Amino acid sequence: PLPFLYTVDLLGPGDHRAVLAREVRAGLADSPKWLSPTWFYDAAGSELYTRITRLPEYYQARTETAILRDNAADVAARTRAETLVELGSGTSEKTVPLLDALGAAGTLRTYSPVDVDAVTLDAAARRVAEAYPGLAVWAVRADFQRHLGRLPRIGRRLVAFLGGTVGNLSAEARETFWRELCGTLAPGDAVLAGADLVKDTGRLVAAYDDAAGVTAAFNRNALNVLNRELGADFEPRAFEHVALYDATSQRIEMRLRATRAMRVVIGALGMVVEFRAGEEMRTEISAKFHRYRLERELTRAGFALGAWYTDPAKDFALVLAHV
Ligand code: AVJ
Image (tube, rainbow, N blue to C red; front, top):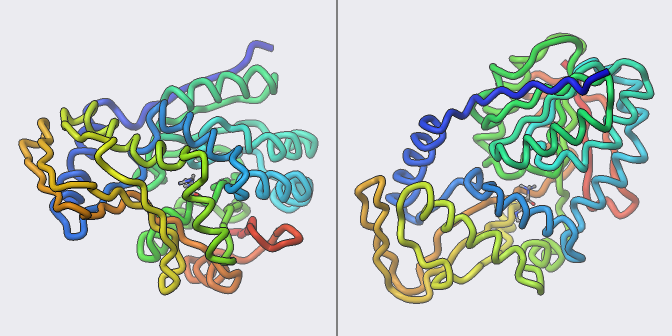
């Protein structure tokens, strides 16, 4: 059968630009300044993130893939999902064990990858459609924080949210996210979320400040996105990459530190932004979890706990929860 591939873009060019402009205006006017990690993922950023997942220091991706490979059959048996919706799907490489297991269980009809980066999403959707003949692939370019209510609702669903991306959300934003997600699901649906676990600070920081400097390039790339999308004149080389672990909030923070005082024009916003020498702008948070904390967030949002899958070293976990 011909590969079935259908693409929906919920982030029209105007909408994408308007949201970016609104967030950048708020973040650069705040103290301390901040940017949303959503904007990392242009084609270059997605490519840099793929390189990050192969770094020796960045254990998360390979650990999650091993957990998924060992437990995908159990997830398929428990969920019997007919539709797999994946938030922040990226290259869909990490999804393969799940697609295979749900295919082997004979229940899967549709895979719906959801990502903000259209280039990576389209390439991934095409690869999956060709690799899994008979599977309908319904690619949706969307921001998972804004479009949960507009994702495919066909059949019994499993929403996969892998990689630990749920950690990019603050505790408050996660509470809203889990509750909204639960609200869009029907009895019998489930969510499978990847979560990086609390561990030795040195290992956590190294995963975000690799010796090869790939994460530093990933971080600085956000400035290239702002320069291109909003007509800004950031000099990425004038900013230093910073990664630190905040033990109180149990999260990694990535920041860009201005190496000297500078004035940046954001053309599309008619904004001029001053940076003091040494001033740090937060570009991403990545929350780290204990099992009880994550399970409590899910039950408070209305989910029923299903399964907890982790690796022997307890570095990373996948939690399965049901509606
Ligand atoms: C893709 C959001 C899971 O937070 O670990 C990797 C992104 N940032 N290195 C993460 C990221 C720096 C990653 N997520």
